Image (tube, rainbow, N blue to C red):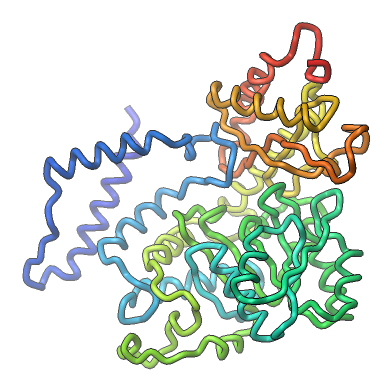
Length: 461
């Protein structure tokens, strides 16, 4: 009988923990409080309460951006928690701070930056906050501009920082509208443009290379929000338009990426990178009560966030050692499989009599589609019904409300151009989604069946 992966996991973790404990074996005994029967009962109760979740780690969960961390990330994080390091200062996280520097350098190298300044954060929101804070420091009073498909965190953060914020319309493919952006830049009121490489709703990739051309004529910073899509820079099967955008990343001023999305890390692990290390002078501060232990630059000096989990850095470092950021390598191949899965699902949706697919195939691994019907309102109702029915077949999707203009002209002839429709949506970000695409499709068709009368389609349902 094959060995149980769970047993192997805990065996390797126990061996590593024993090796870690040897480092302090010469000290007087200082045992941690033991877990007894009462603790066991509580843990069983915790497990019972956690039943009230969708099966996020399973391949049939294809809804939101939830990807299970790699077992080595889980093990390394758990191992580090026996030390519980704080990467705010060297005195509180000596080894984990050094590992963070290495892990962040690996991310910068992936984006082809020969030099950088950066650190890990608790997630993309705080990483974006630091990027926009720097933007405000360098261009006081000037506005932040982002597409209407950019993450809502940018407008919220701008408000927190007291910076003006301007929303730029997206085109019919969900990418930032270049003509609208250029007209806005001519006002000279924009200090930073947020370029999203992988929008959270549909995975759209903004045309970074074209925006860099605009930067030659207008003075503004370019911040790339690649929290979701950044790792796709390693892949070899993107569309030519997306490839051009990712290849232009080295010319951006700052980048955010979330290793807790495609980087196989536990929540929360984000990263902010600046191309110019001189940005560090804007962070510099003095807290002698915290930083007494070393004259070396520590991560607390280049971060707005104070206490940060050193265990996140340990987990990321360990994962990078196992799965390097190499084009064509195992890590990149898994991302390519996710993209293939999305393209295959799009192909099937496009030929189905029950669904309507968007104008363009997915740029990354996010797919959205509508229920075929005569009006956006009816399509929205059907989408909700199919969503509920799919869950009863153990297929977990997501819902998203999107502009009707993302679909081919004439999909809903009587709809206003500004109308919106509730769509079904899948994030096929797990390495095995391509292998499971037949099961996903079978369950999706089963979910449609109750709403299709005999010899008809959803169009007349």
